[in-house]
Length: 85
Image (cartoon, rainbow, N blue to C red; front, side, top):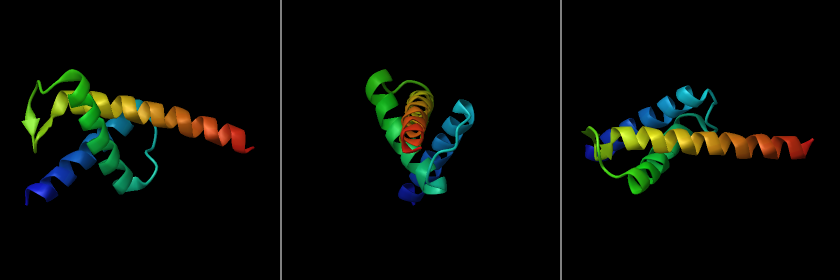
């Protein structure tokens, strides 16, 4: 049950990051979950484990890490779209 809860929280973190940045995450729900997990990992690696903890995610560093990840991903995707034309 904790794995399912982690998937849900990771998806919500990825979705919130997409809303904050204002960009859609490629891959829909799966993309949100991946962005949430990778962003949470990066955020906790860089910022530590401070703030409220839900499903083994420190929420504030996880959201900050996911926002940075989504922003960088959107820049890379935009650069690839410009070179394809």
